[in-house]
Amino acid sequence: MPTVELADGPTLRYREWGRPDGAVLLMLHGTTSDSTTWKNVAPGLGEHFRVIALDLRGRADSEWPDEYSLPLMADDVVGFMDALGILGAVLVGHSSGAIVAFLVTAGHQDRVRMLVLEEMPPPDAVKPPLELPMGPDPAGRYDWKAVIAIRRWLNAGHPDWWQLANSLRVPTLVIGGTRGPYDQNRTRELAVAMPDATFVSLDLGHTPHAERPSAFLQVVLPFLAPLAK
Image (cartoon, rainbow, N blue to C red):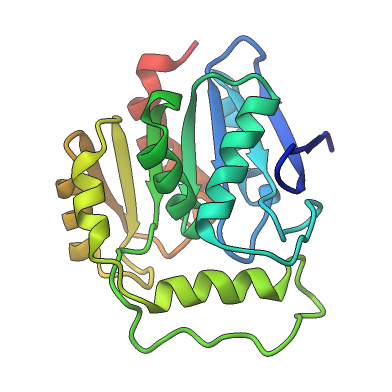
C-alpha cells in the first residue's frame, strides 16, 4: 500500500483503484473499519473515477498517534489531499467517516466538488449512550482510543451542526439505511437543511455499500454522473 507522511500529522496509508485521469473520489470509512470496506464498490466507481480509499489515523495500516478527534481526522484529509496534489475531490464518507467528510466540506468548500454521506449520524446525542471500550480489541485493526474519541462525540449533542448544514453549498447525496441505527426522519431533516442535498433511503442496514454494493452504486453513480469520465 502507498504511504503519505503528513507534515503536521501521522503517516497514512491508502488504496487506489480506477483511472488516473478521472475525477478523484476520496473514500472515508467508519469508526472500526478501514479502506478495505470499499473493495466491492471501488471497481465499479473506478470505471469512471480515480478512487482513493484512506485508512484514517488510528486505523489499520495508518499510524496510531494516540491523539484523536474528528476535527484532527478532517485536518488529516486536507493534508493528505495537499500531499498528493489533489486540488479538489468528491468525498464519500460512511458513518463517522461521513462526519469527517462533512467537517472537511464545512471548512474547505472550495476543495470539495461533490459530497456523499452514507449513514451519517444526525447531530443528536445518542440514546442510550454508546459504550466506551475499556481496552483494545485483540481482533480489531483499530486503536481503541480512537473509538473512545468518536463515541464521546456521538454521545454528545451538536445542535450547531444544523446551522453548519445550512452553510454547505456543495452538491450532496445523503444515503440512509432503513434498518440502520439512526432515525431516518432526522437524517432526512439534515439533508433538507443543506441547500443542495438529495436524500435517498435504502432498505438496508448501517453499511449499504458492503451489504448490497449494487444498490449503493445504483444511487451513487447517477448522482456523480456530471463528473464521470
